[in-house]
Amino acid sequence: MPRTHHNVSASMLTFLSTPLVLTDLGKKLSRRQEPAELVQRNIMREDEAHPGVSNFLIQQKMALESEKAKDALNRKIGIRPDKVDLKLRNILRIDSTESLTGVPPPASSSTATTAANTIGGTPVGPLDLQRTDDFATRQQAVRSILKRRPEKSDLEASNILKPNSSVDPSIVAAQERLKKSQLVDVLDARLRERPDAEQLCERRILMFSETVEVLPTFRKSEYNRKPDGNATFRKLTPQMKVQIREELNTFKKHEMPVHEQSLRNTCFH
Image (cartoon, rainbow, N blue to C red; front, side, top):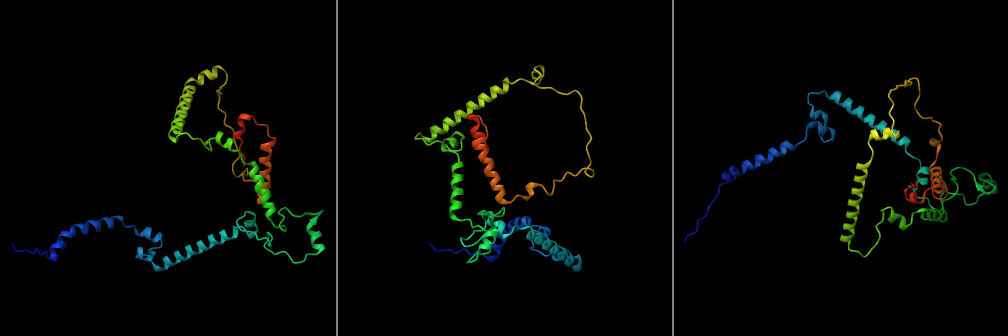
């Protein structure tokens, strides 16, 4: 049987693929971004997006935006923390031969310098910038933090840790779902049994005032509601904040009277 060759011309292929090309092009054109968005993303210049606008006005606008960006950057640079503050926050590492101020200690210190920086053997200054934070001090701080952490039983009682058991996880999950459903039933029952507003008013637990009184107040121009600029909390250093937090946690753990069933609800900072 003789072979037959089917030759398809290029024009026929073009004719068949034209609708697909038009559909694809229409989708891309519908998804393309507007000129304003391209200008905002610095992909297109503003003079290209608005050819009718004068180039002089566009250049003035660009120069103004550049000056505004420089001013914003200068403000941020002006309020950034210094090197000492970054070291106190443990953002910058302190070498063993370097003080917190960044100035290396002298090779030989005189007695007069030592006497000027100490009073009775205690370093002077709230931040103690001349004393290096050695390994022993950090070790003691870590040990004090580890002593304050809750026990494993407390975490399990607070549902932070799940108790380790050899029971199948599917059985444990089923038990938890059962406990949740029982708790939901108990809460729904209590909500249904709670008294309404009329019963509370009869028992003189809930009382409403029959008169509404509106009291005048001062205007913003008459009464300054801004906080005091010389307040104590504005002058606290990072080290002072840490000391206050440790003192508060110690008081809550050892001195504050708390019911034994409410110990797990104590919030430590």
